[in-house]
Image (cartoon, rainbow, N blue to C red; front, side, top):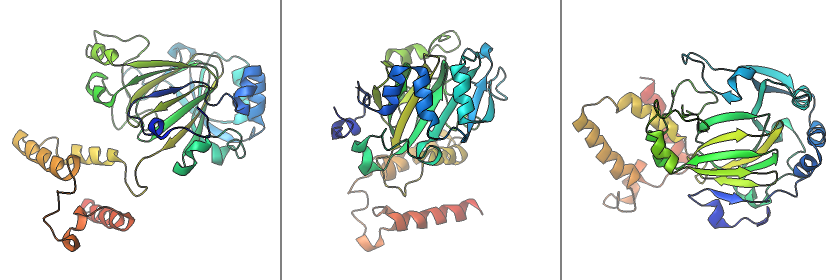
Length: 321
């Protein structure tokens, strides 16, 4: 299929979709096909002096960005570098693990997106990011938006798990995370089944994809995915968008509030709240408030930007009491 016309059933899929060669025509990919140096030179033209946040790990971590041994910190450090200096170090073959994580293209690299874009996504106004590094491994995590990840240099291996496998992935802390999202503690390349025995079940449901430059992968919202970069210079561009109105908050806020207000209730009370959540949220339909006159439905009426602001204000007032 074409980057100008991706079918709706792909963009709304609840399963991953591999899109071979979707962006092989991009100048960024064409440069990478010539050489690593040509790839870096192409990128250098869009902001060699731009200062960016980079993760650096010692050779001993084997490219796996993760926690330290006692989970008090991480096994890497954060640094700020000029983009051109990062490219030079990658080309020189540094033994350190280097990782430029999700970096907004429109803000940091003006002009790069126009010739390296997915016009089919224009109606969704997606956020575009670039990722760059050497041989490394990003722990299994999920993202709230839908995502098309486009490999532009090197090979990448994605290991994906459906959302319902969360209990078998041994998720780490919610409040100490490498990049904001909770991550699985299991190393998918060398799983320790003595320490993480339930992972054997998750592995049965795993889907693994190896992408070459020009290939893309649609990752549905909340699918857990670990990513391995398999070459000395590996680059990726991804596009994020949500299939929900912009006024909606992240459900992670709801999860944190539930930890505060629901998790430690007596079992019977938790069951009662589960019934309320099913009624008002998970099983809600046109019948939920049909018995209430439309003008009196309040928060049970369809949400819009105005009512979302009112609800957010109400919540802030309650939390500040």
